[in-house]
Length: 456
Image (cartoon, rainbow, N blue to C red):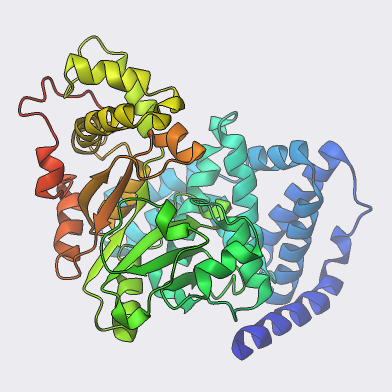
């Protein structure tokens, strides 16, 4: 902490001193298109400067100006990044000719450098400013919000994503335990960023952090020291749970941590929208499991209780087909009628829906794939990529309005067998293999019918 603070103070000092070196760039801040022109001009100046002090000062002014822009000028800046700060085509052509005439490591490196878009170096120099990394993450959040309407800006996102993949790899991340004594500044962020099971108030948060059978860990990056990147909430239990409500019940009786044998990862939340799609490295869950194992050697089972956020929408598409794979006509009718959440009020319908959900869920996890061969379920991709095994399907696991809407009440357990994580990860990464328990495989019909087409 002291070194980071010292470094930040030093950068701020350099910035202030460097401002005197860029007086020619000082103008009364223009509006609209002129604002965009000014920030583009400063970006060109930043790429042309060699002095460290002036570079840090210009980078700071660019980020300050960007933060003051409205949506339109920000989009215009992204357009300039896409069109004016791309690759230098003549330089690439010359480097290619040199490499073809004399292919060796040196000419290959020259070609590599020539092919890099100018905006990558611009982003690296912007990162020198105080809080530069934080500002660039916020900038990418703005960019991601625009991509659905402006796919032409994807080249800018590709460069930010490329840089972030290096800056935020697992080697830089630090895991910290979050408990009721953690600073309120960070606890407020835990409440705000919780993405799986809403934390209603401070009392709700306290129930998730203070009891002896509760743990929470967060991953931090030195450049975003007080901003968690991802956090994991854990319930310590004596068996693998099938439903979320008992874990979060306000009137439940806590267990003594020493009496527990099972660690349940029931909520994993990514905190920074600007880091969406950036892998923080595999085996993050394994790292948390090993932290828990050191504290509580009696823990021998590590599982999740995970949502299935895309299951309902997939099921509706699947049932709309003429002959849905993996389901009998009776099961199809039951599941079509389960779109109305009132089925949870009738015990007989609950049993019927739960029985029909099992083969549908097994079909979803084992056969429904994207065009790249990976499962269509994003939570499954995360856990399978981390080396987990799909352990158990739990119809009725989440009867909340959100759970019924997103997954028809379905939740699943992924098992983290610490001795097989690497093997499972390699099978998934190299072959797209969904490692699943025998019970999940048995849930499929003996004759699942025709294969499912990849989802897009």
